[in-house]
Image: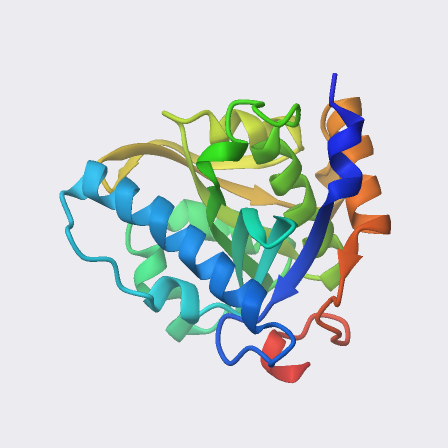
Length: 230
């Protein structure tokens, strides 16, 4: 059962990957600091890397975040792309993808969102706030996907952290399973609008409340356009 008293203290914020406005600057810095803290530790553990670059954060079209006060508790990175373009299919993101997985992703249409680096602050993990934050954050990312009019959203979900099961509860379709990325087992998944379930009832209610009531300053754009077109 979700602790509903936590929900009114949260806010959902959309940020650009780069060039935040003056009104966005404080949240942007907080989101980047949390992302860097978590992924520096993750890549040190998985790949033995000692230095973390900002590229994966700053190259995004949109960063969807959950804040409590000034603290970023969770976020996900989003890029809007046309999968029919060779320059997109040959992006380094797809280097580990089997051809059949790419074909499965494009089966619903060419306009896709690449969703990556779902990130949870240590203080918000393991239901410590009375909220399954990774499920809720994934649900919010799906809401953004559905709002955008994209044909599909995709991601590489870590199986050792249970993220693949989280996405399947929400209606994701497996494209390839049991792969290894950054020395971690992953499933490649696709989200198609017609297959989304909302997940477990408590999570679905929390997502509806946060999206409908606690969302601040959404990036305004016409149907399926990236943040640069805002």
